[in-house]
Amino acid sequence: MKIVDAQFLTSAQSIVDSPSPDRAEVAFLGRSNVGKSSLLNTLVNRKGLAKSSSTPGKTQLINYFDIKFKTENEELPYLFARFVDLPGFGYARVSKSLKKDWNRNLTGYLEERPCLQIFVHLIDARHTDLAIDKNVDEFLKQHKRGDQIIINAFTKIDKLKQNDLQKLKRENPNGIFISNLKKRGMIDLQNAITGYLFGN
Image (cartoon, rainbow, N blue to C red; front, side, top):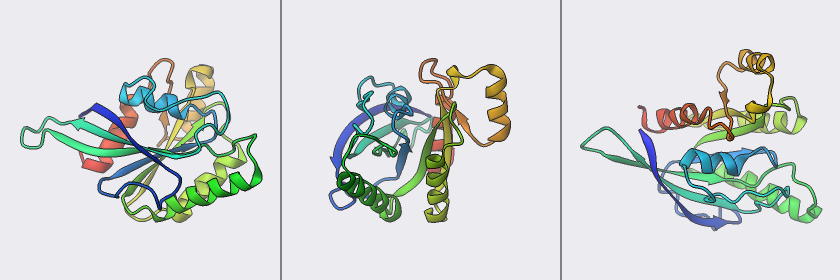
């Protein structure tokens, strides 16, 4: 199974103006500048689909993308899901009131979206012990439903020494290890997503 099409659907400020929850959703969330937009573009093989920026907090909206998968089943040749690019947390240079609104809207989506099936928590492989990531991980574990899973994906592994990468893998046996630059780990991540959504 592979992704054969990815299209931007819409942006929303909160769950209230989000599209109809008519297909399974995979939410990508991570600290600002963790490489979330770049990962999404590499995963779906579409340059510029998810907008990336060097400015923390640039992604202020919940962005929805319709994803089409090609299967090997002639009777059901295509399957569909939705990828959701969430605002980066830990962003800087925004007002306290705006940050409060973002946090409230983000929490509302994570807690209340009925079709949300997978949380992909992106963590910078060079900085795995940050309090903000630990807080998000704890939040997800506390709030996830029985039909939801959390995937921890460690980005920028190309910046690690080999010994440090092996240590990280030992410490996180269920993690996915990503390099956007070298396109490593993308198949592992896609398989983890489709395996849970579609059971293949």
